[in-house]
Length: 75
Length: 170
Image 1 (cartoon, helix red, strand yellow):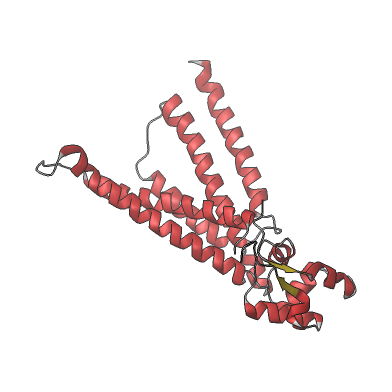
Image 2 (tube, each protein chain N blue to C red):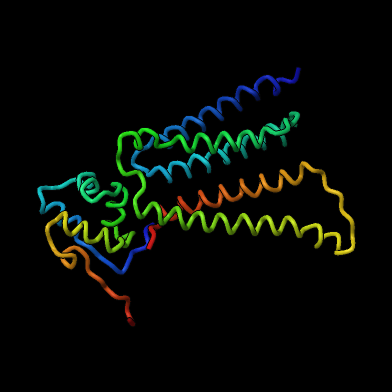
Protein backbone atom coordinates (compact mmCIF):
# COMPACT_ATOMS: atom_id res chain seq x y z
CA UNK A 1 0.00 0.00 0.00
CA UNK A 2 1.49 3.34 -1.03
CA UNK A 3 1.37 6.46 1.11
CA UNK A 4 0.28 9.35 -1.13
CA UNK A 5 2.33 12.54 -1.22
CA UNK A 6 0.90 16.09 -1.20
CA UNK A 7 2.54 16.62 -4.56
CA UNK A 8 0.53 15.27 -7.47
CA UNK A 9 1.81 15.00 -11.02
CA UNK A 10 0.76 14.52 -14.63
CA UNK A 11 3.66 12.32 -15.69
CA UNK A 12 1.48 9.49 -16.99
CA UNK A 13 -0.66 11.93 -19.04
CA UNK A 14 2.44 13.68 -20.41
CA UNK A 15 4.05 10.36 -21.36
CA UNK A 16 1.04 9.48 -23.49
CA UNK A 17 0.94 12.98 -24.97
CA UNK A 18 4.58 12.54 -26.02
CA UNK A 19 4.08 9.60 -28.38
CA UNK A 20 3.27 7.05 -25.68
CA UNK A 21 6.73 7.31 -24.21
CA UNK A 22 7.46 4.20 -22.12
CA UNK A 23 8.37 4.40 -18.43
CA UNK A 24 11.79 2.93 -19.25
CA UNK A 25 12.43 5.50 -22.02
CA UNK A 26 11.51 8.35 -19.68
CA UNK A 27 13.65 6.84 -16.91
CA UNK A 28 16.63 6.64 -19.29
CA UNK A 29 16.12 10.28 -20.32
CA UNK A 30 16.19 11.62 -16.78
CA UNK A 31 18.72 9.12 -15.38
CA UNK A 32 16.61 7.20 -12.88
CA UNK A 33 15.30 3.64 -12.66
CA UNK A 34 11.94 2.58 -14.09
CA UNK A 35 10.80 1.75 -10.53
CA UNK A 36 11.16 5.43 -9.60
CA UNK A 37 8.95 6.49 -12.54
CA UNK A 38 6.36 3.92 -11.38
CA UNK A 39 6.54 5.30 -7.81
CA UNK A 40 6.20 8.88 -9.08
CA UNK A 41 3.15 8.04 -11.17
CA UNK A 42 1.58 6.25 -8.22
CA UNK A 43 2.17 9.32 -6.05
CA UNK A 44 4.34 7.25 -3.71
CA UNK A 45 7.42 9.42 -4.10
CA UNK A 46 8.00 13.18 -4.04
CA UNK A 47 11.07 13.85 -6.21
CA UNK A 48 13.96 16.21 -5.53
CA UNK A 49 13.91 19.62 -7.17
CA UNK A 50 16.62 18.50 -9.58
CA UNK A 51 14.64 15.47 -10.76
CA UNK A 52 11.48 17.58 -11.06
CA UNK A 53 13.32 19.98 -13.40
CA UNK A 54 14.80 17.08 -15.39
CA UNK A 55 11.32 15.59 -15.88
CA UNK A 56 9.87 18.93 -16.94
CA UNK A 57 12.72 19.41 -19.41
CA UNK A 58 12.21 15.89 -20.79
CA UNK A 59 8.62 16.85 -21.65
CA UNK A 60 9.57 20.38 -22.76
CA UNK A 61 7.22 22.06 -20.27
CA UNK A 62 7.48 24.09 -17.07
CA UNK A 63 7.75 22.32 -13.70
CA UNK A 64 4.27 23.55 -12.75
CA UNK A 65 2.85 21.73 -15.75
CA UNK A 66 4.18 18.45 -14.38
CA UNK A 67 3.84 18.83 -10.60
CA UNK A 68 1.08 20.39 -8.51
CA UNK A 69 1.20 21.01 -4.77
CA UNK A 70 -2.02 20.13 -2.93
CA UNK A 71 -1.71 21.17 0.72
CA UNK A 72 -3.41 19.02 3.32
CA UNK A 73 -6.63 20.33 4.88
CA UNK A 74 -5.99 22.91 7.60
CA UNK A 75 -2.72 24.18 6.05
CA UNK B 1 16.81 -47.66 11.55
CA UNK B 2 13.96 -45.27 12.27
CA UNK B 3 12.13 -44.58 8.95
CA UNK B 4 11.86 -40.90 9.91
CA UNK B 5 15.66 -40.63 9.72
CA UNK B 6 15.58 -41.95 6.14
CA UNK B 7 12.66 -39.85 4.83
CA UNK B 8 13.39 -36.64 6.75
CA UNK B 9 16.65 -35.65 4.98
CA UNK B 10 14.93 -36.02 1.59
CA UNK B 11 11.97 -33.92 2.69
CA UNK B 12 14.28 -31.28 4.17
CA UNK B 13 16.45 -31.20 1.04
CA UNK B 14 13.39 -30.93 -1.23
CA UNK B 15 11.84 -28.17 0.91
CA UNK B 16 15.06 -26.17 1.06
CA UNK B 17 15.61 -26.63 -2.70
CA UNK B 18 12.05 -25.42 -3.42
CA UNK B 19 12.48 -22.44 -1.08
CA UNK B 20 15.88 -21.70 -2.57
CA UNK B 21 14.44 -21.93 -6.09
CA UNK B 22 11.68 -19.44 -5.29
CA UNK B 23 14.24 -17.15 -3.70
CA UNK B 24 16.48 -17.41 -6.77
CA UNK B 25 13.54 -16.48 -9.06
CA UNK B 26 12.84 -13.45 -6.86
CA UNK B 27 16.49 -12.41 -6.88
CA UNK B 28 16.54 -12.51 -10.71
CA UNK B 29 13.33 -10.45 -11.01
CA UNK B 30 14.48 -7.28 -12.76
CA UNK B 31 11.23 -5.42 -12.08
CA UNK B 32 12.54 -5.02 -8.52
CA UNK B 33 15.44 -2.71 -7.71
CA UNK B 34 18.80 -4.20 -6.72
CA UNK B 35 18.41 -3.06 -3.09
CA UNK B 36 14.96 -4.64 -2.88
CA UNK B 37 16.21 -7.93 -4.33
CA UNK B 38 19.11 -7.95 -1.87
CA UNK B 39 16.68 -7.33 0.97
CA UNK B 40 14.42 -10.19 -0.14
CA UNK B 41 17.44 -12.49 -0.46
CA UNK B 42 18.50 -11.69 3.11
CA UNK B 43 14.96 -12.08 4.52
CA UNK B 44 14.38 -15.31 2.56
CA UNK B 45 17.74 -16.75 3.61
CA UNK B 46 17.08 -15.98 7.27
CA UNK B 47 13.61 -17.51 6.90
CA UNK B 48 15.03 -20.69 5.34
CA UNK B 49 17.77 -20.79 7.98
CA UNK B 50 15.06 -20.51 10.66
CA UNK B 51 13.13 -23.41 9.13
CA UNK B 52 16.36 -25.41 8.84
CA UNK B 53 17.20 -24.69 12.48
CA UNK B 54 13.76 -25.83 13.68
CA UNK B 55 13.94 -29.08 11.65
CA UNK B 56 17.60 -30.01 12.12
CA UNK B 57 18.24 -28.75 15.64
CA UNK B 58 14.95 -28.75 17.50
CA UNK B 59 13.15 -31.69 15.86
CA UNK B 60 15.91 -34.05 14.67
CA UNK B 61 18.47 -32.87 17.25
CA UNK B 62 21.38 -33.29 14.83
CA UNK B 63 24.82 -32.26 16.14
CA UNK B 64 25.68 -28.55 15.75
CA UNK B 65 28.63 -27.40 13.68
CA UNK B 66 30.60 -24.54 15.22
CA UNK B 67 31.06 -21.51 12.99
CA UNK B 68 28.60 -22.54 10.28
CA UNK B 69 26.33 -19.60 11.19
CA UNK B 70 29.13 -17.07 10.70
CA UNK B 71 30.16 -18.76 7.43
CA UNK B 72 26.53 -18.58 6.27
CA UNK B 73 26.29 -14.89 7.09
CA UNK B 74 29.51 -14.07 5.24
CA UNK B 75 28.31 -16.09 2.22
CA UNK B 76 25.02 -14.18 2.29
CA UNK B 77 26.85 -10.84 2.30
CA UNK B 78 29.00 -12.00 -0.65
CA UNK B 79 26.02 -13.33 -2.66
CA UNK B 80 23.87 -10.25 -2.03
CA UNK B 81 26.62 -7.95 -3.31
CA UNK B 82 26.73 -10.06 -6.49
CA UNK B 83 23.07 -9.20 -7.29
CA UNK B 84 22.71 -6.59 -10.04
CA UNK B 85 26.21 -7.15 -11.41
CA UNK B 86 24.86 -7.53 -14.94
CA UNK B 87 22.85 -4.28 -14.75
CA UNK B 88 25.92 -2.45 -13.48
CA UNK B 89 27.92 -3.85 -16.39
CA UNK B 90 25.23 -2.69 -18.85
CA UNK B 91 25.76 0.85 -17.56
CA UNK B 92 22.11 1.43 -16.59
CA UNK B 93 21.34 3.57 -13.53
CA UNK B 94 20.96 1.02 -10.74
CA UNK B 95 20.44 3.35 -7.78
CA UNK B 96 18.88 6.78 -8.14
CA UNK B 97 17.89 9.38 -5.53
CA UNK B 98 14.89 7.34 -4.33
CA UNK B 99 17.00 4.20 -3.82
CA UNK B 100 19.64 6.25 -2.00
CA UNK B 101 17.02 7.76 0.31
CA UNK B 102 15.60 4.32 1.12
CA UNK B 103 19.11 2.94 1.71
CA UNK B 104 19.97 5.90 3.95
CA UNK B 105 16.89 5.42 6.13
CA UNK B 106 17.35 1.63 6.29
CA UNK B 107 21.02 2.02 7.27
CA UNK B 108 20.10 4.52 9.97
CA UNK B 109 17.39 2.32 11.50
CA UNK B 110 19.52 -0.84 11.17
CA UNK B 111 22.46 0.89 12.87
CA UNK B 112 20.26 2.19 15.71
CA UNK B 113 18.79 -1.28 16.28
CA UNK B 114 22.28 -2.85 16.26
CA UNK B 115 23.44 -0.53 19.04
CA UNK B 116 20.24 -0.98 21.05
CA UNK B 117 20.60 -4.79 20.83
CA UNK B 118 24.30 -4.50 21.73
CA UNK B 119 23.61 -2.32 24.78
CA UNK B 120 20.77 -4.59 25.96
CA UNK B 121 23.03 -7.66 25.62
CA UNK B 122 25.90 -5.94 27.47
CA UNK B 123 23.72 -4.73 30.34
CA UNK B 124 21.76 -7.99 30.68
CA UNK B 125 24.25 -9.57 33.17
CA UNK B 126 24.10 -6.41 35.30
CA UNK B 127 20.31 -6.47 35.39
CA UNK B 128 20.06 -10.23 35.95
CA UNK B 129 22.91 -10.74 38.47
CA UNK B 130 23.21 -7.33 40.11
CA UNK B 131 26.03 -4.74 40.09
CA UNK B 132 28.32 -6.50 42.62
CA UNK B 133 28.22 -9.96 41.07
CA UNK B 134 31.01 -11.60 39.10
CA UNK B 135 30.08 -13.23 35.83
CA UNK B 136 32.32 -15.47 33.74
CA UNK B 137 31.57 -15.46 30.04
CA UNK B 138 32.98 -17.83 27.40
CA UNK B 139 35.07 -15.96 24.82
CA UNK B 140 32.92 -17.39 22.02
CA UNK B 141 29.97 -15.47 23.42
CA UNK B 142 31.65 -12.14 22.65
CA UNK B 143 31.98 -13.07 18.98
CA UNK B 144 28.42 -14.33 19.03
CA UNK B 145 27.28 -11.01 20.48
CA UNK B 146 28.72 -9.06 17.55
CA UNK B 147 27.57 -11.69 15.05
CA UNK B 148 23.99 -11.73 16.37
CA UNK B 149 23.91 -7.93 16.45
CA UNK B 150 25.05 -7.87 12.83
CA UNK B 151 22.44 -10.49 11.88
CA UNK B 152 19.67 -8.49 13.60
CA UNK B 153 20.88 -5.34 11.84
CA UNK B 154 20.74 -7.10 8.44
CA UNK B 155 17.19 -8.37 9.02
CA UNK B 156 15.89 -5.02 10.33
CA UNK B 157 17.59 -3.12 7.50
CA UNK B 158 16.08 -5.49 4.92
CA UNK B 159 12.62 -5.19 6.48
CA UNK B 160 12.87 -1.38 6.30
CA UNK B 161 14.00 -1.53 2.65
CA UNK B 162 11.13 -3.82 1.64
CA UNK B 163 8.59 -1.73 3.60
CA UNK B 164 9.75 1.58 2.12
CA UNK B 165 9.69 0.21 -1.43
CA UNK B 166 6.12 -1.01 -0.85
CA UNK B 167 4.80 1.98 1.13
CA UNK B 168 6.68 4.74 -0.67
CA UNK B 169 9.16 7.27 0.67
CA UNK B 170 8.42 10.94 1.18
